[in-house]
Image (cartoon, rainbow, N blue to C red; front, side, top):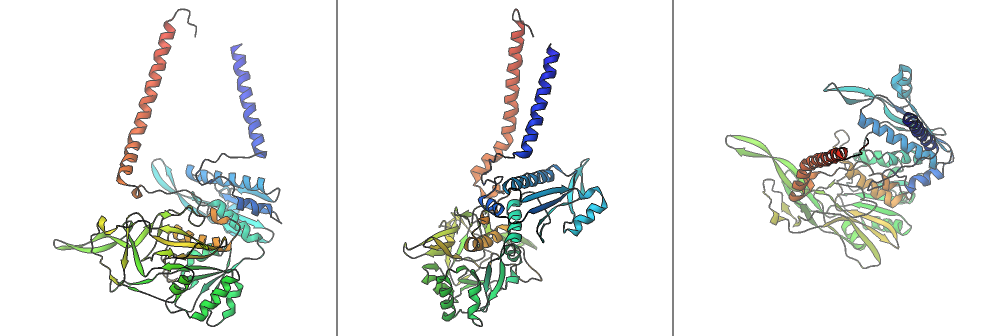
Length: 501
C-alpha cells in the first residue's frame, strides 16, 4: 500500500509540473523584485508594441554549451521576447538558432550581421577561449536592425524597443548642433552620435549663414562655444523657443590651460543669454574631494617616480536628483565644471539634476593649478553644489543646462578618448527628455548596477567587510545547532515507549 501511494504521489507531481509548463507557454509572467523594475515591460515598450502596423520578427543567434553567466543572459533575453510576443497581440514573433551546429548556419548568422565573439570558459581549472554567437536580428517589413552582442547587464529592453521604434517610426525628429563659434563638431562626439542615430536625424546649424536652418529641428544643442555668439543669433534662438523649440546647453565659464597650469574666465555671450532665462552659470570653478587622480613625478632619494595625486578639478559626480534624466546613473566625470543656479521667481520651475559631494568647494578664477598640492578636508567646506538642471515653463521642459560641455566629447576622431557610459547617458537622456515623448529614456540605464564599495564611508565599508566574513560562519553554526537539536529530539523520541518509526 505504501509503495502504491508513493507511485501515485510521484505521478501526480509529474502531471502537475507538466500542466504548469503547458500553461506557462500560453500565460507567461514573472515576479519582479528589482529596485528599477528591470524585468517588467515599461509603458513605453507596451505603447510601441500596441501600435505596430507590421509584424516584427526577431531571429536570435545564440550558441549552446555556454558558461552559466552567459546562459542566464540568453534565458533573460528569451523571457523578454516572450513578454514582447504576449504584449504585441500577434504582431511579434521570434526564433532561436544555434549557429554552432554547422558551417552553413554560421555563414547565415554572419551574413545577417551577427559575428562570433570570444568568451572565457573555465575548463579543468584552466581559462580557455570559446567562440560564441550572442546576437539577434530584428526585422519588420523590408527594414532590419542588428543587435550584434547581447551581453550580461546591458539594457536589453531599451536596445530592443529602440530598434523596433527606429524601424516603425515614419518620421524621426531632427537634432541640430550649433556651429560657427568654435563648438566641437558632432563627429567629435562619436559615442553620442551612435546612441542618438537610433532615434534622431542629426544636422549642424550655422545661424550666421542660414538663419532658417533652425526651423527644421526640434532641439538645438549648444556645446562649449569658444567665440562670441552674436545677439542676432540669440534673437533667432529666442524665436525658436517661443515656437516650441528646445535647447540643451553645455557651458563652462572657465578655460583651463594645462600647459601653463592656469585657469581663467571665459565669456561667449551664452552666459548672458542664460541669465536672461534666470539661469546663472558662475564664472567660478567647482572642485570636489571625490575626484580623478593624475600621475605626478616626485623625487624620492636618487629617483623620480610617478605618484597618483588627487585632482579635484575633475570631480566624480555621484549625487543625482530623482529625475528621468538621471535615474540609473551612478557616476559622471566632469572637467573644470562651473556651478549652475536658478535666480528667477516661481513663474518657471528649475530642477537641479546633479550635485557635487558633501566635500566640495568653489574657487574664484583666475587661479593656478597646483598638481603637487596635498589637499585636506578643510579645503572642501561646501556640499551639494548644483552643476546642472532642467528649466520647465508652463509644465514643459524647454531648456537643460550642464556646467561643463566636455563630458560627452571624444575629441579628435582619429584618436578618440572613450567616455564612460554614464557620461553618454546623461547627454542622450537630456536630449530624449526634450525631444522624445515615448518614455524610452527610462530604459537606457536599466541594467546591472555597480555600487563600488570605495564610495562608502569607512565605518560602512568595515561593517560590510566583517558581515561578509562572519555571516556565512554564523549561518553554518546556526544550521549545525538546529540539526543537532533535531537529532537530540529524535533520540529522545525513539527512547519513548510505544515509538513506531
